[in-house]
Amino acid sequence: MTTELRPPGLTTVAPDVLLSIARLTALQVDGVYAMARSPRRSKDEHATEGVLASIFGEEVDLDIYLVLEKDTNVRQVARSVQDQVHRAITEMVGMQPGSINIHIEDIYFPEA
Image (cartoon, rainbow, N blue to C red; front, side):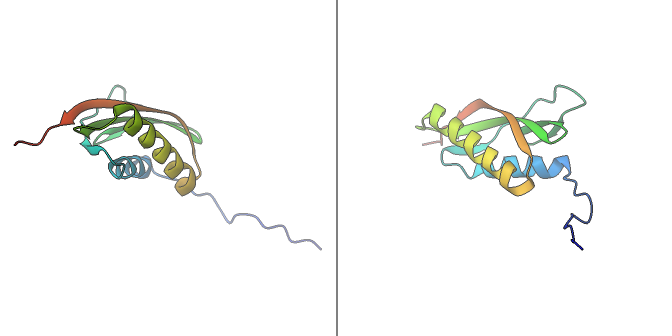
């Protein structure tokens, strides 16, 4: 007699969890000052401060809106945010990130 190990049931992840993971991960990347306001383009998208997500089954597309610190390499920071968010979504919830689009909305210059 063989005993087959099966998961006991279904696990679902709320869209707000994906948004939080993406937002908190982006904020930890060096060179990111803050999240920018994200425009909601359709009712099928899920949104929070600085992040829009479109979910298709086990795949999630993200648009991340950022304010960067001054004197940062925009391309390097954007790439790092993409890499870190991809890793976080994959490792934490097991979903497959599709496109992760980075939108630089402003640069923060502290007052002298």
